[in-house]
View 1 (tube, rainbow, N blue to C red):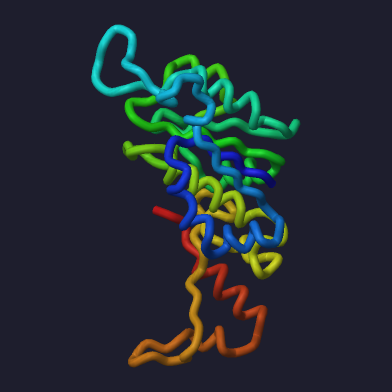
View 2 (view 1 turned 60 degrees about the vertical axis):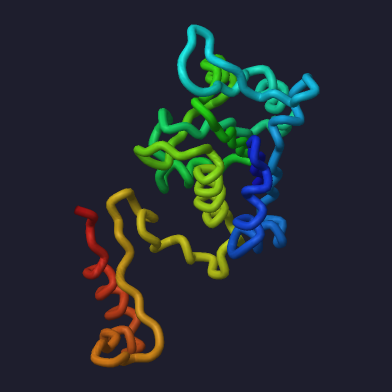
Length: 215
């Protein structure tokens, strides 16, 4: 799986992608993450990526031309998906993450300022939002998408079935059962005896009963 992220703040991603599961996935060659500076696809000496909106209004709008040039160069694989990250997009959830995990290349376009020239919509396959709120830019949503999709790829998590019983793994209402680890008793809070029994059938039955539907 290859992720390509288009942004005007490429260094934001260094810390997050250099840690934990996403970092290990890169070292194991399960994913390749490439961050592209949109300013490199401009043609003027000031590397201008935005301009005032036609008709007036507050803020600046990201221009369509450098985005077009970036996508033309970056989109290399046949089974690819170009995604615009915007509050106007469809809600990103576990089902969408599972669908995206089937692609060979995901290109994430991070917004900033007051948004994009409307013609950018002609260049993307879909628009996604991670929630009903407005962020400063699309960089955090890009991290969310990369993380959620990466952990679903074969061989990324330590155990082959680590993602099978997670919250939302069965459907969008499924909540994972409670889990405990050592010590068996902490202060006055003991772990359930059934989990210490070694009886896997009873343990599975207990877990199914404990898994709750989201209200």
